[in-house]
Image 1 (cartoon, helix red, strand yellow):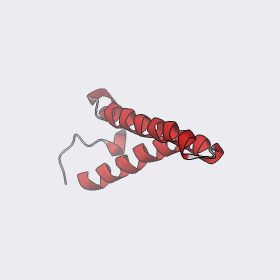
Image 2 (cartoon, rainbow, N blue to C red):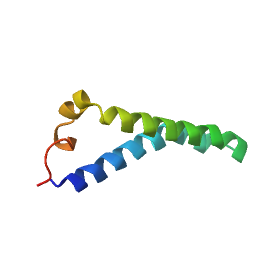
Image 3 (cartoon, helix red, strand yellow):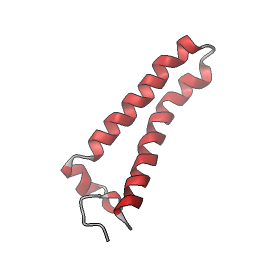
Image 4 (cartoon, one colour):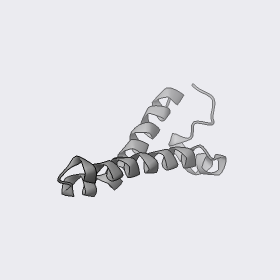
Amino acid sequence: MKKSSKQTARTVIQAGIGIAVALPGLVAATGVDETIPWVAGGLAVSAAVTRLMAVPQVQKFLGWLNTDDEEK
């Protein structure tokens, strides 16, 4: 798998995790004031997962999503 494909897959997973965290709050929200903290929470989780996936030890654990190897 090409490095660019791996990077795309990782981005989709990271965003999906962030959205999954925010989804209950977004569904239950009735106004903008209630949704802002959930959106911020989702973005924070996505950023944390992105940073975590960049750690070399996690890269080794990720298997086919490891982007440390050379692009083929």
